[in-house]
Image (cartoon, rainbow, N blue to C red):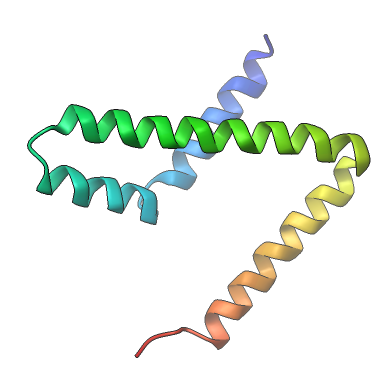
Amino acid sequence: MDFKVLFTTFGMIFLAELGDKTQLATFAFASNSKSRLAVFLGSAGALVLTSLLAVLFGSVVSRLVPSNYIKIGAGALFVLLGLWMLLFPGGK
């Protein structure tokens, strides 16, 4: 096992997930539920499943597309989505 990759992935995902809408939704579910364990297990299971799908999809795409193109595409997508959110905030 590559511990550098493990700890880097953990750190980046942990920081990215802090304060995002998934964490806020989990917070809301926990505040309205008597079974916090069920909320935790449901939330953790969903994160594990989405992460599994990302790893599987990423491993398939990486066989077809060079990694530098994937990084450039991901960066461009983040920039485009950021611009979209600035130009079209979607508020009432």
